[in-house]
Length: 218
Image (cartoon, rainbow, N blue to C red):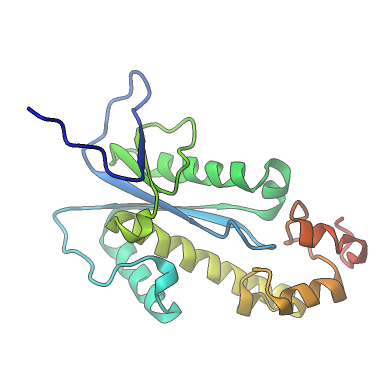
């Protein structure tokens, strides 16, 4: 029997030695917030139950309006067999770097749903070490796989809400609008006020303004 060729843009890692797959179900994994200058990086994992109705309208979270993401996020939580959202805060990002923080969040999210999933399907190219199950990294997975799309939505909804909450603590930065990304308005606020405790000081645009730290956290 001829083997099927591997999918383009997919790399795989087998389950660790001795691990017993919980099932043949897939946990989709995606992150939100690697690039911003402030706030956490958030990683979600979602496992769908094939016996439950499919959710219509799933897509990469970046392609959806905020109101649509909120609506789909509620449906995902209602219909998923299992889901988990891991939040890695800015201080931890500064301690271990954003790449390692993202891998940490992926590992935490997968570990939380591994009791029902035998495979983690991760958006991107990285597979974190120490996963309890087999894993695949899919380039562009948030546009190719429904479980990754769902994880993308949950991660984005969770992070956006966290940034709106941070706006209540630090309204001078406009976190509710730009969600911590390096927009001209955000950079101008950094220059005027210096970084707050939720800024990532390991990121160059923040580090360059740390001499104006009004919060005493530099």
